[in-house]
Image (tube, rainbow, N blue to C red; front, top):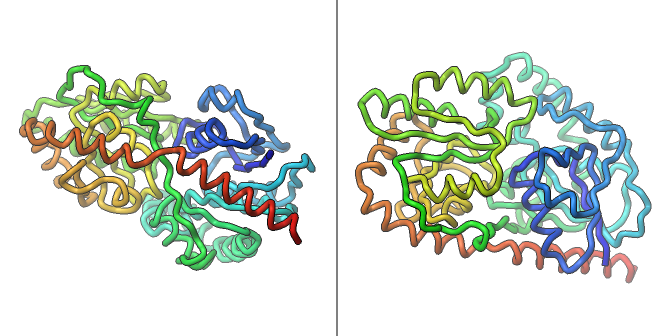
Length: 384
C-alpha cells in the first residue's frame, strides 16, 4: 500500500526528521512526504532517497507567533494532491494539523507536541522573558489559534503521541482526552550507535538542536563554576543550527568566551556518535522536552545522561541507574558534573545499564504500529 505523510517543514537533523527517515526506511509500505519546505542539503541525506514533495508556497520557519499564524493560513489553504494514497499521517508540532482544513480521508496524527509557545508553561515563561512584544502577540492571537486547532483535531481518526508528557499537553490543551491518545515513543538505532572501544576523555557533550528552547545557557554556566574552581573538563555543544537560531548561537559563544566550551554546528552522524562514545557523560538541559531522542542516543553509546527532571527525559533516563534527573539549576548541574568527573568507577559501572536501557527503544516497534494503524484506517474507510 502507499500512504502520505505531511509536516510543514523538513530541513534539520532533529528527532522529527529522524523519525520520518526511520519510518520510511523500515515500513512495509510506500510513502510520499508532503511539506511546505524541504531543504535536502541541511537535513538527513537519506530522506532524499524517498519521495518528498515540496508544496507551494514555502512557509517561514520562524517560530514566533505572527509568522506561525501566517504559515497556518498557508497550510489551511492547501489541498494535497489527489495521488491515490490510502491514508494520511500528519506530523503535528503545532501547525501540521491545519492541512486537514481541505483534506478528507483516513487520517492519523503523530504528535511531537502541541504548539509549545501556546501549551507548554516552561516555553511560554521563557518567551515572556525573552520578548515581551512576542509574548503580548501570543496572548492576543492565542485564543483564535487554539479554537481553530481544536477544530482540526476533531478530524483525526487516530492520535499517536511521542510521550506521556505530550499526551498530557494534548489533554491540557483540550485537543483530545488522554484516553483517546496512544503513546508511541520514538526509538534509537542501537546498531548504528554503540559504545565502541575509544578512550573516554574528561568532557561533557550536549547534543541536539542549538536553539533557545534547549536552555544551553545552563550547561555553559555550570562549566563556568567548574572552571572557576579549577576542575579539568570541557564541554562540546553539537547540533543543528538554522538561520533563526544563529543569533542565539552567537550569544552562547559570547557567554562561553574564555571557558573550555566548543561549539560544533551541524555535525555529521558519525561525528555525533564519536562524541557520545568518547565523552564522560552527556548533558540534556531543555526546560521541558517533549520526548528527546538525544538521551537515548547517548545511552546507546554507553554514556550516562545528566538531564533536567522534567518532560520526556523522565520516560527514558533512570535516575541513579542510567544517569541523573536534576533540577534546572546551575549549581545543581555543576555539583553532579563534578561528582561524575571525580568518581569514574561509579560512572563506568552505569555504562552497561545505559546501553541496556537504550536497547529497549527500537524503531521497528514504532514502524510496525504506524503501519498497522494506517492499514486499519484505510480498511475502515473502504468498508463504509
